[in-house]
Image (cartoon, rainbow, N blue to C red; front, side, top):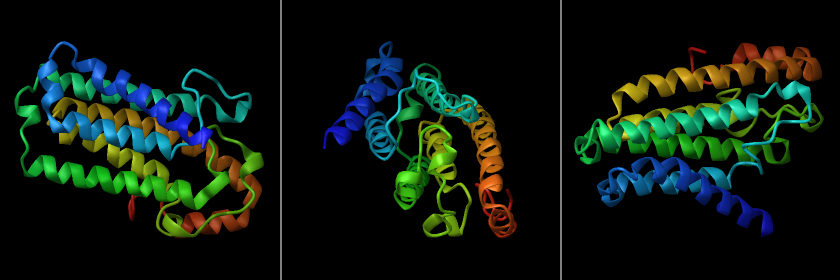
Amino acid sequence: MKLYTQKILLGIIAVAAVVLLPVVGNLQMLYAPQIWVLAIIGIIASFFQPSYNPFKKSVDKEDRGTALQIIWSIYITQIITIAEAAYLRFPESIHWDYITAMALAVMIVGLILRSWAVITLGNQFTWHIDRKMSKNLIKTGPFRFLRHPGYAGALLTYTFSAVFLHSWFSLVINFVVLIIAFSRRIYFEESILREIFGKNYLEYCKKVKKIIPLIW
């Protein structure tokens, strides 16, 4: 219970800094349901995230700073997205139309996919890369369709947040920054998984794409 409370508390703090702080110069954004939807998504994502500290590096050099790169890439891209919506796209950014609804649906799918991946991995899901926790090659649940469904889910959620707020410059920025962060993490993760699981993992890689079905 204490762990879950800490996760929710961290989620609230992160949401306050990333979602609410960027709109202090345009408080009318606080009346928009989109802002509170993003806040709820942020808290839920934090709840299904392993315990982490956005300021703490891994003691294991194999992580190569990838965990911190990912979380700060998400924080910064979301701040940019919300700032664009508040100061460059307002009030169009808070109009609810079919694009908003479509983006919300994609974000929810991404959140569900990431949460499903976390639950499927159980204690093998770690914040920092940790080879000691890679005891079994998981190929069930969402891992039947993607090798890294958690990253795929996060990519959907945090890229389409820009579409959700009609922040079109941020859409490009989010996709590029997050793809770079996830690609770097995947590179180091998979090098370890190949060492641990050998031929079995190579065969799995031939059958299942990384984060984009049928493409990559």
